[in-house]
Image (cartoon, rainbow, N blue to C red; front, top):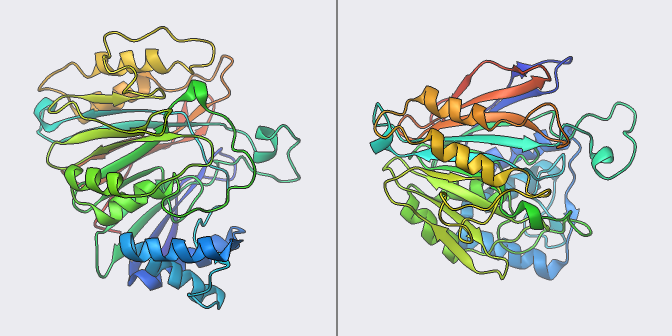
Length: 375
């Protein structure tokens, strides 16, 4: 079953948001995703056959849901699912990347006992051509102007709802029916550089596949830690880190150091906030450096979030939303970013609530609530 609806924005707004609901077997879901991606201009990318075979083997062993959806993509294209020279995933239609801020409020700090995470997704409001230093083509839309909310209701496995800017088989935000929530952020903004060369798929998890992998395969934070430490993952030049939280009150940030080392930051039963610097290098939010010209305000945003999260035992959903509004990107100044959506996850209710950027002047959509277990 496939259902596509328009849920926010319109032709005169910056964003037009679609909600895609998919139900059935994973192969059927993969076929529907590939058909929608083809409508948006996606085509499978050529790949070294040795790498292609290794990728399929890795997915079969570690992420069988994704492998089955790739089989569905092959069916949509009339291809042999066992071929090795084409990548049948990475259903992308715009480039990836972001700034962003996020905060986790555990159940013990909430007025109603619900753990909640809030996040702002900050990105360029311009076209791909402009980001690359060129001139927009005729009728070229801004790269982040057509996000998707995707609800997946598989016959076998965890239902989920995810929010994505650019890849229908990946996501920037997600929560599943077990109450596991995941969101990605740029990990080290001062060191970030544009990708070098084409984004050729490798073996393991690409940056925006990693959140989808976790909501497909994990039910709690402990499982997610084990899954991340046991997985291969790669990026295309912009390193990301991830806030993961569950319905049991656990949360952590996973990130890689500049030397490639893996780090899990877990503060126990306390608020956990993250912006765009490596937390393991600056573990004390009360002792952060001052922002520099290329830090994108990451340290000041983190201070603000922790100040907002100090209402121990009495934080409401409105307080989480207010905290994210306090670090929303300004519409004036030198930074070429906007907060393109702001999300609040309720891990107890298994919901994702989002407001979408419609244009300058503080124009955002109404709060839209999506459930991980219902279309």
